[in-house]
Image (cartoon, rainbow, N blue to C red; front, side, top):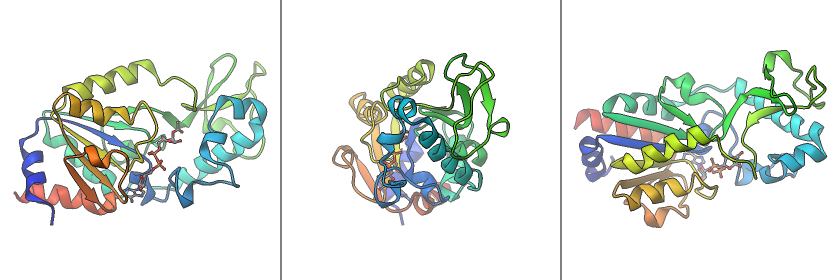
Amino acid sequence: MIDTNIIKLLKNSRRVAVLTGAGISAESGVPTFRGADGLWKNYRPEELASPIAFRNNPDMVWEWYSWRKNLIKNCAPNPGHYALAKMEKLFEKFTLITQNVDGIHRQAGSDNILELHGNINRNFCCECRKEYPDNDLVLGSKVNRCSCGGLIRPAVVWFGENLPEEVLEKAFSAVVDCDLFISIGTSSVVYPAALMPLKAKEEGAALIEINMEPTPLTPESDFFLKGACGVILPNLMEDVHNA
Ligand code: OAD
């Protein structure tokens, strides 16, 4: 049973911004970045997801992304993703900002999605920027090369790189314009995404956080719902529906 004040808040909100992180896809089988699941062959994500790592060892970075790509191809949306797709229809304005690169929100039927960190299903040449779908590439332990000779990399944002400007602008405009901000399944440590709930609050929005564990954002949140988002989000939607 969800706190009735949260249900009232949802009922009374008109413009909602949601930020999701790896936690929402955990129940679909996509490993999160931090915590016990986050390590791959003893490397931390920060050591793999960077332009320097790719320059120094493109084969290893490509192998990690090939592993993630193959894993994600076999994952389907979970009840948390579907609940958010339904939630979109409840409000005058609803913006789903995601740090996830897995594309699962779209599969679940969400529409107004801003992918802050790109999409793992796309790739491009580092030299000539030509785009390549996964089907044209070999996923495995050897990096692919473009017809121009350049290395082909996944179209995700790496540590030390700028986020896509237009996406970031749209995200911040939703953040400052919302009356309710919901942060879901993110450790709230990677910037600029981690700034978004704080900025929304500063601009007067109410703040709900959903996570298995408290995060640096928890003390700032008006409501903290502790638990799995694949359970909490469908419950939230059901209570809103029945209220
Ligand atoms: P993290 O792996 O840092 O955090 C996942 C969060 O989800 C943690 O706070 C968990 O407690 C929580 N969590 C796990 N399972 C959950 C569940 N079933 N229900 C609710 N919460 C759950 O992932 P992000 O915060 O998304 O960036 O990481 C942010 C960025 O750092 C990623 O986008 C990626 C990474 O390095 C880039 O690759 C640029």
